[in-house]
Length: 292
Length: 267
Image (cartoon, rainbow over all chains, first blue to last red; front, side):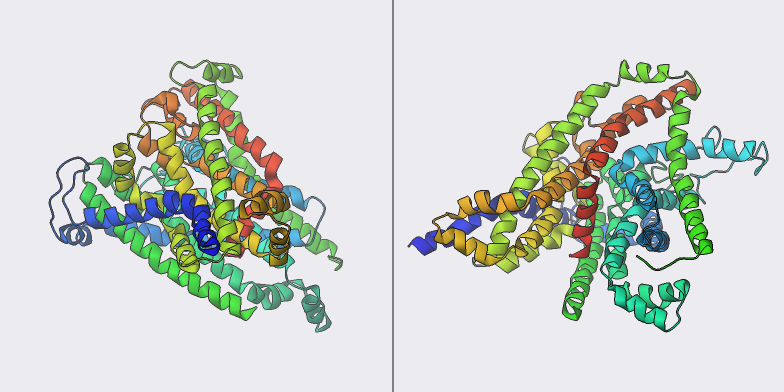
């Protein structure tokens, strides 16, 4: 009796998190899956239309543009952030005087709201009176009448990528730094006995030993790309036209246009991608665990 | 590190760090410069006495929502982390994995049902309507950190407390909590910053400007056609709105950095 009560009692400790997080999120996922099969307008109309939304989605050019943008974004941000983050982490590991100040500078944007950073960049990158073009004109790098559309059709995606690098490079740096501190010093001493210089040690010892950490950063980058919303919505808003839409902003737009059923179908596609990738993350995690 | 580095390598390293630091500080320095370029420091007073935008109210709203969600997250993630780490019950592993599977669910993917549900609960356009999903979507990462932390506390300690007549809740409160100061601080700071920075949820769920947190209140300082002076004022507002995050960052840098790595390295 007493032990049965004790066993039941354990559920009380997890009840709040199960209700608030588990129940709410799974309910929302189930609701999305159901609504994606209807012509729901978000209010009252809700007729079952089978896979109509998905058929429409596959034929919608905006969907493919958004998917492509997400893909370019994740490859570029993961790559740039990993290279710069590793560079700073490797230098910081040498404990040069002042390296803590540099670490703090690169980490600072993580504590700042993406909404604020995005707004600063939006006005900085604005084509006519924005500060970047003004500076370039003043320095004579571009002609006085040249207007570079940093948030336009061609460069918009790359500006968004750079904003993300600004915000999150410090994250890759910290993760690499933590992993570097865990590499035993005798590994390097052995390499030095073999006559390996600084660069050689970086390429042949450090980078291969950090493979697991890089894997974690890749998975987090992929998930982060699916979560990216603020820095797109507040700079280009998906425009001009639909050229810089991400899956998240495409969904938000569809919802605002009262196409809730269609928006739910986009949500289900995002969830499927996230689900497949988190399975990969778990498998990679188990492999890491068994190696240790 | 005691390896001797040549002068050339040292110079190259400082050069690389300085070049990057200049790029990173440029937007921040620029924002400060632009905030006074037209209208001078008076812009800050204009923003603080704005008709449409109430700075202290926005800061207060952010503190209320981020603070409440951080407190709730710390309490429920430490309770659940304790149970998942130190108690035996049916379905423990399955429930834990089902919860962690939600870590990768982006808020954006479920905004349609989320809006509908919060609306039907009568919580749309209220603090609680934002705090609830803030907790839902941020608590799972914190559960992971808390459970990993409790896993590192030896079971013998719990057994000894039980033998001394401590109940399960007493063990949590009197033994585990005092041992977990830095992890609790890490979880609290991380939850606070993530909630403070959230933009999508309040934008989706709030309509009344008097409830807007800072991320959403930025829109109140913007309009379609802005004069140079208004843009300067916007920059002043952005800087004023960043100050609280920077203070929180400086005060809690150690916990924030360890939290960010704890969430990633051991997942």
